[in-house]
Image 1 (tube, rainbow, N blue to C red):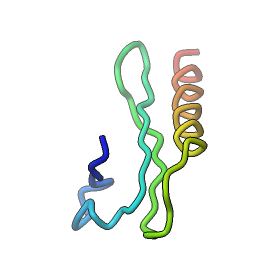
Image 2 (image 1 turned 120 degrees about the horizontal axis):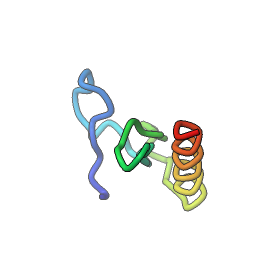
Image 3 (image 1 turned 180 degrees about the vertical axis):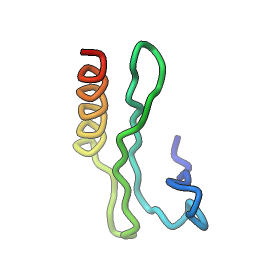
Image 4 (image 1 turned 180 degrees about the horizontal axis):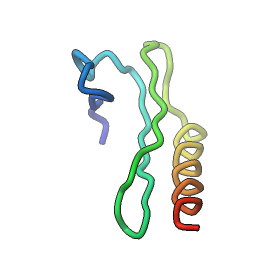
Length: 67
């Protein structure tokens, strides 16, 4: 979704992140981790390139874990 989420339990607020992309790392149908790209810089915007980068990295790691 478009709503920011907290990255760690120590975060005061998810609103401090102005841009984030999160993709799950899946192993045998179960999520085992995530690949995240986050920014606190208000000038940063997520582009299709960043989305594809994070999705590709998560897919690669998923395949590596299953090998």
